[in-house]
Length: 396
Image 1 (tube, rainbow, N blue to C red):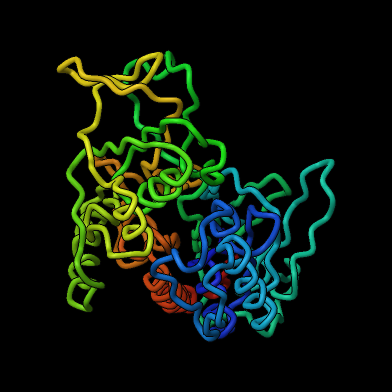
Image 2: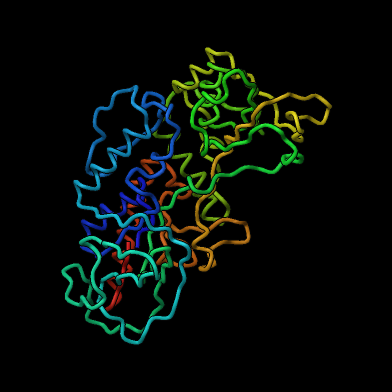
């Protein structure tokens, strides 16, 4: 089972298609595009940094002035059609559980059809989903050795329940925005919003906005709002601006640093904390507007703005939290994958506690090029794992 059809999920589906394994892809969105569907309309392609093509299909030439939330979902939709990836959507996964398999597991190498939730319409699972009795599926994996009963994964959703032998989780971070707590947050009379809900600068015309966060999204917000209003920029640590693009050596060091954390069972660091801010069009625009003067993070929020321990304050009409996201993994909680350090310990793309569970787009693969590589690696490992079982189920 693959959960999620963004960059990481489609990469995994592409390699699963080529592997001969039977699979299903579930996606919570109404259509293609992953997180790009939800980006603010004023984010243009010329300001997008670090897009990498999906495996097997180059990104077409796109007008620099096109909104990213239109152009990139079109590319994803073309990709799904080109490689015949029938994504089952919209399906919201609520929980994944490990349950004992029956003594006789039907359908080697197949994914079971869902048990429907009462009151929901039937789903078209696409040509890669097979009936639970499809023992002669051309994509089935069989071995000559008998297999002892093993646990299945039960995937509970708002549209029914699936069972699977293995899982590729590619749910990303967009559905789990992070806003840190500060005293007085409930007293603020203005508007507070996370960048996940930011739709452009128009609503802030003539207003003063405090932008919180040291990443690229904060820079975008500062540059755009400066054209219609005024801003104050605050961050937890001083921002580090890079002079040039990332070299291969820098890329390897970034991956190694993030990989070290997830191997230790710690939560992944933010990308900017590791890489710094690259010289993007948004950085240049913000610098031209003179809005890159940063203040340290405030100590509390007041009814009229923000305040520091020394008594200084800034009045604000709005606070924009560009404070990033956390991995959207709540549906995996029943599997008890987290370590005492708060993260999920990884071994390659699979979790150390359960080799059936692969997290792509997590930790060192949380980039477009990293997601592509992780999708390929996960499928390679899953094929090896399932080929040792006589009645392997996979729903990916």
